[in-house]
Length: 110
Image (tube, rainbow, N blue to C red; front, side, top):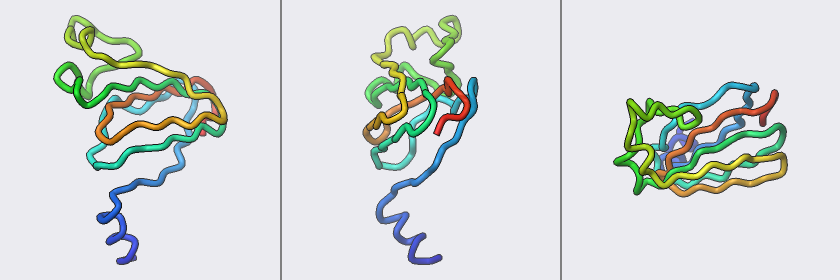
C-alpha cells in the first residue's frame, strides 16, 4: 500500500525473516541503504564476516571470505575484517554500509 511504500523511503529500513540451510550462504556485500542492521539469531548457528566500509578498497562482491582466493583478490589480506559465529539468543549489530557475508552452519538457521 502507498503508506507503507512511502514509509520505506522515509525510514530506509528492511524487515526480513531469513531461514537458511547448512552450507548455504549469502554473497559478500554491503547494503545500499543508509540503515544499520540488527540480526537476532533464533535457531541454529551462523558464521559472519564483517568488514567496515573503510576497507572497501580491498573488497569485492565476488570474494568468498570463507575460502578467499588470494591469487585473484590479494588485497583482501590487507583488509581489517572480523569473523564471529552467532548462536541462538545472540543479537548482532552492524552499522550502515558495513560489508557482510554469512554462512549457515546448521539446518535450519533462523
